[in-house]
Length: 204
Ligand code: NAP
Image (cartoon, rainbow, N blue to C red; front, top):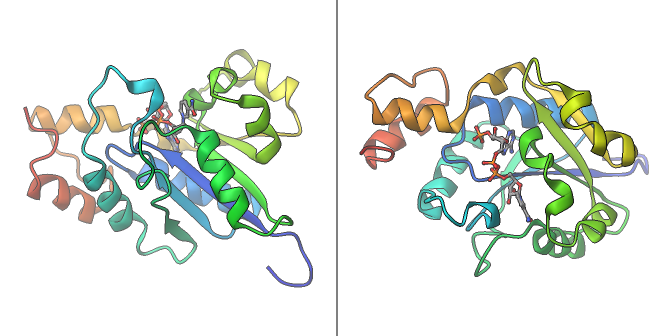
């Protein structure tokens, strides 16, 4: 960004198992609304809240994220969580990214509203709220005041929302559809669809 304007970087955190158009539209909506440049997609290695659920090998989730974002010049993919051993706590990522940017750069962590809903239970949440802003991407019909109200009121200057109609698409539904042999065309980029079939992901 030029003319001395403050720079804002987006950090799009997720498991991306698999990445789909909902994620891409959410990142693009946040980028435009908050003037973020670039938006860094950060696939996690071991999600701390999914200790009891198997997630697809990190290598596949990373490569699908690269394939999905390649055509957008404002999107980049970061390996910061994939290259760090152990559980992927967002605080560790934010500390690392904060140190790598100029102090004048503001960081905006973007994720699904349902993930950010539990923010207060995340590791070192007070420090986290001092390191970045949060953008919660909501699905249409999301009862913002009921669900996220406690966060958006208490941390009004730190937690924002964007409504993303395409978030009616979900990774869980895509995995189920592949398992049941149903089509997933138009829910995610064709390159990701081909990758899923080539590597036999989500099959029983
Ligand atoms: P999740 O619990 O699997 O997802 C919750 C909801 O949010 C789902 O509906 C999901 O849809 C949606 N979602 C997830 N990421 C999204 C994104 N980037 N954009 C739009 N919607 C999104 O969430 P998760 O992916 O595992 O975690 C989200 C982020 O929060 C990750 O970066 C994770 O590391 C971080 N997190 C950190 C902590 C911690 O530090 N203690 C705890 C929890 C989460 P889909 O299933 O379609 O993606």
